[in-house]
Image (cartoon, rainbow, N blue to C red; front, side, top):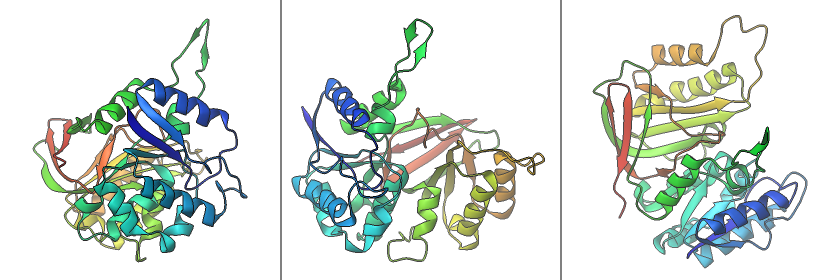
Length: 312
């Protein structure tokens, strides 16, 4: 069985039940699950104080399980960036550890890329997290219970962790037929990406494929963040930008027709880089796994997008 460790690097777990359920489900999928000793610690809104969460990251890295999956996101990794032993993380990857998660874990994933000689040295996985993706109770639907674990998320995760996943695909808007791009794949949660800009933990990647998502942010906030990246020259330095889910925000009566579509249209008008929508990734039940730091090939045929890679 493949060893998988669940650890809490950021926000607090309000209850233990979702973590226990996630561990049970992951074990049923064929993983040898271990829950880190401090995964359920609590300090204010964090999963333990800073020293506790830093120690958990380093403890997991030293153990080098096949998979290190964050229990949840929230906020907290940013506090630790200046103290993380990046060489220790790299050594764990060299020993076979695949660090997996999204949301606040973006700070760890991109910080790692900023502290390696080349992005491929720090390949990690943007993908599911324990409680959000595997620890939800199944909702009632009449007399039936709906499976709370998304089948696509589950199957893609298993394939990625087995080393068999070599590509993911999705449908985008018309207008990009024939687009072909190669470069390092990087990105994650938009707020976390922007928070690293101008810091020592910013990966200076040019000619890459940048993917972005966010949650609970109104479209105007999304636009503001995307324009910050554009005005800083980040977007125009990329081969392509892939937009995932931007969900769970509240509309305003002041919007007057302003939507995420408006955001994308404006962004396309000011950036020379192709901006594609539809990537199945973010704070949504259905998500693919993406090898952050890997060199990928992106190809569009009609409205069908394929992202492929070859990992050693």
